[in-house]
Amino acid sequence: MPATCDTVYVVDPDESVHDAITTLLQSAGVHVACFRTPEAFLNSFNSRTTRGCCLLLEAELPGIGSLALIRKVNDQVPGMPIVVLASTNDSNIAAQALRAGALDVIDKPLFGGHLLDRILGVSATGTYAVTS
Image (cartoon, rainbow, N blue to C red):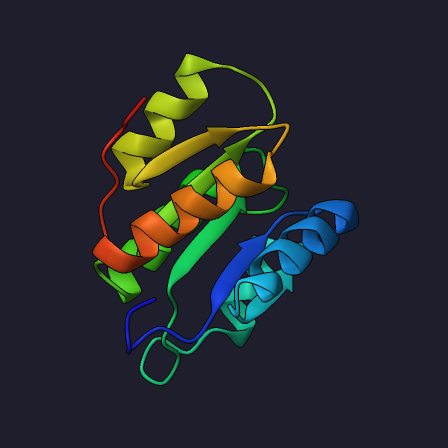
């Protein structure tokens, strides 16, 4: 992980997703902060003092939604890697998220090693290159 990285943020209304991602990332020595809504994340996030490795968010969020959250984070913290977790294999959702500024879209269900590799990849480089 980069020296300036201290937290992976997770925005997903599903508590079981929080638990699974927290367990996975903490096992790799990464701190995780979870939020149920975009508004809860934005209310606690201070772009001047908070350093994040990565923002993981569910593609279909309540409230302002995932696309608006991606745009707000990109405006406040340009360059913060954003990864969208999609519940469906919908290329339209993926395309919209990537156009809004996400670096990667990962389809659920999530698989531990694969997810960890993708998160650490975007966190370390700020980019993600698709490899097979």
